[in-house]
Length: 390
Image 1 (spheres, rainbow, N blue to C red):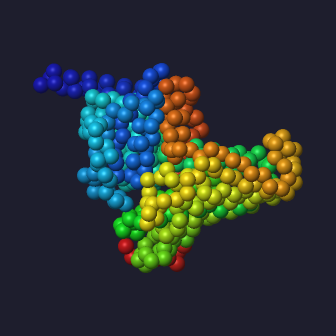
Image 2: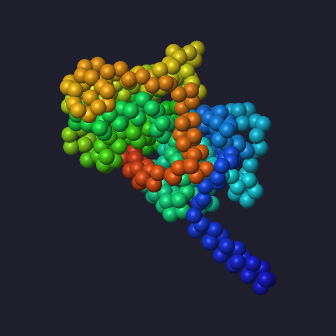
Image 3: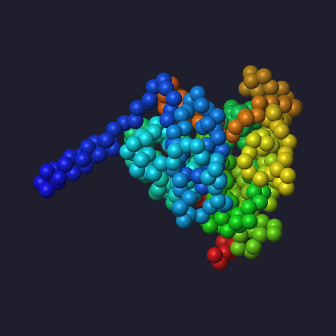
């Protein structure tokens, strides 16, 4: 018994020391990936992206989370993941020991699983949203920051070249002082359970989708927290009175407003962005090629195949900054190749980090914390006249 106690103590000490070890890049080899969970709406897209990037990644298996009691929009199709080993969590940590875990569990399970993975010191791509309280994600961030563990969040527009160029133009001052941003994340997934699914979360569709906009908007304002962020929440046309499926969110800055709309009875392929400044405006619609999406796009599932994303920018005057960038006064049409995969850009960047070809941008830890704070403000500061019984 004494020997058993000593062994257990030694194991605890070893575990504690291991928990404090700094993460180190894997070097120039394929990155071994485990796909944890298949309930999340983006699961199939991430699975396909990792398989597509087979020069960077070796997909070694997945974890089945379908026994979870957490809310989901629809039941996942397990056939998509057949042909690869299905691991238990214990096998992942004790036997497989992957270089990267892509977390695609149900929304309510994301924070708990990510905390466990962070404590094991494994880099992760964590899908969003990041929980309904600030504490859970803050704990994950602290663990990863203290140990230099790469922590990438699945903000799906993060590597959209067209949107990144719009942000760059705003930050350069070419558009003058930005005073208005209007962004649309409407959709029409069409699943019968969607009203119940969205309404399960505080803020409904605002909780599920506005974080994608907040993530790229905040750098335009130097990542400053808005003076106030709030939402109006209503049922979309045709949905039950209790449904939180039509939301409008406002971020208020001293001289600017950001308006974000999400309606579940909209048209997914026409999501758009418009930015206005004191020296001009620019807009883009659509924001990506929806032919590549896995969501339902209508009765026959068809939409136009967008090979080029187009930003139309009008400038009042030709400032020195605009001239140096090669723009002209009046209309400027900026064209960008449409990515063939929404998620590949992010994962390619993460692969370079895990191999050690570039450092993880430390400022992202703080940036993502700020995005999460504003996202929570959006869903907790709700029009007080709206009442929901469920």
